[in-house]
Image 1 (tube, helix red, strand yellow):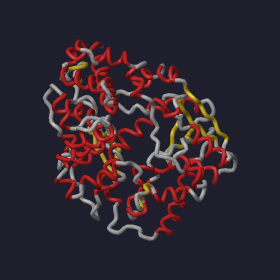
Image 2 (image 1 turned 60 degrees about the vertical axis):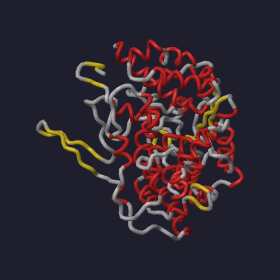
Image 3 (image 1 turned 90 degrees about the vertical axis):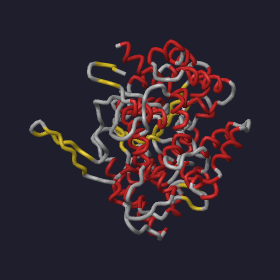
Image 4 (image 1 turned 120 degrees about the vertical axis):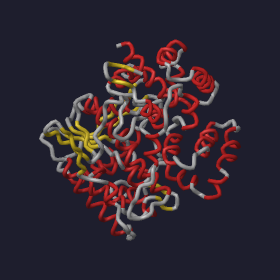
Length: 453
């Protein structure tokens, strides 16, 4: 599709976007525009552009892992102290984002420990209790003695900002947690100019459910029986089982991106092949799943975490934090992603990351040295908004506006029958489909806007 003079939509990037919720690697929504790869810089000289790499994560993987827990924990503590101390250096007011989860709490605790005065901390919550993390953040802040500010949003306040944050991204981007990130940044900017964020902890220390799924999917018995298991689970009336059915319906080849897409409630490759009308291939997705030659063999869980570190973290989470914070001219710094911390985590025994089913084990044990375990113990809670509820009520106008027959005909990319069936399933109780619908709204809105211009 031609959008502007000499700019055409990248069909393969659209395929990848529907699968992942973001456009990965060096690709963009346009065929003629590319991103600079991570750890690289460009040199322009005499009408020629050359790319050079200054840091490569694959080269930092060692043959042996650290197997002494006590020494590893002490080394991690020193690395975090050094990283956070560096990132507290500022000639302007500084603070931390605090959700009350492990990552933001350890960053805040160490910052409070190495700082000479109480750290400014900021949390945000919704008046919807299911999506209100501020209670947990306040407990942590009170224990640490930080200078804490919390902002409880009414739904209408947040909904009023939805289109602003969508406009702030220059290509389709389906991560709806950009909204609360933008709003907490907006609040923090009233008090500080720089904030530390806890991003990176889940990818480095295996905090996502995807890492358990990677182990299951690669179990030889379950792998052989994955399709019959998927069919049995799908006929269940429970949405949790239907979601699990989608994960088990995994291809042999692209299992890493498949697990990620289903954890995020996005489209599988099978679904995309039915959904898209345009000519496409899955070249980008194939490349993301290709085997990487490393100095030691990674377990399936480690491979999944490495996938997230290279793609989800870089092309989604860090993009989200950067754009959402700079929307309010707030600088966000990510001390858990100091290269020394990353290199340490890459070469840590997996048993220190997932220990008897306990995820992020070493990071939690270190956090408990600063904050009592009873304060920190709670279910893992993503930084999210009640999107499923909003799409059925206040944001239903976006479905009406961008997923109607005329709009789908205008862009001519999505199969109208498949979209219609998806909406029917959502309204008939398959609520887990909300993120698929959101990703279609974002895509349709982007394409419609550019066609109109």
